Length: 83
Image 1 (cartoon, rainbow, N blue to C red):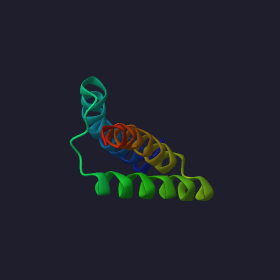
Image 2 (tube, helix red, strand yellow; image 1 turned 180 degrees about the horizontal axis):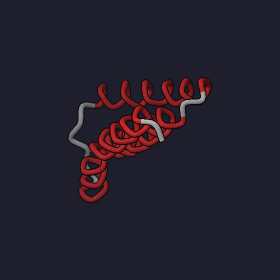
Image 3 (cartoon, rainbow, N blue to C red; image 1 turned 120 degrees about the horizontal axis):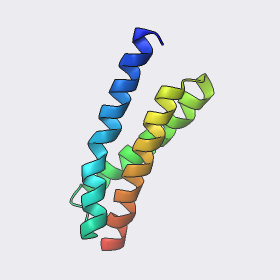
Image 4 (tube, helix red, strand yellow; image 1 turned 45 degrees about the horizontal axis):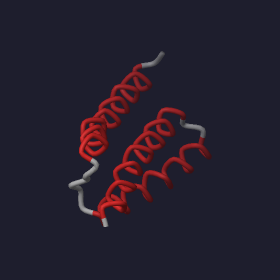
């Protein structure tokens, strides 16, 4: 594996991992303290980047964006259920 791929994998793990504590807290408390507009924009952007990375065949970028979109979508669903 080349150094660029290793750096990409580490970056992906750090970014995806940064959402884990918030998602776990959201599921545990059934409350999402994040700003609704932020979550909507984040889910839309990560979803679009997931499609883009699939089209260009970048599986590290695809996995990163898919998992980020998934975790932020969980936060969005809880936030919408609060209303």
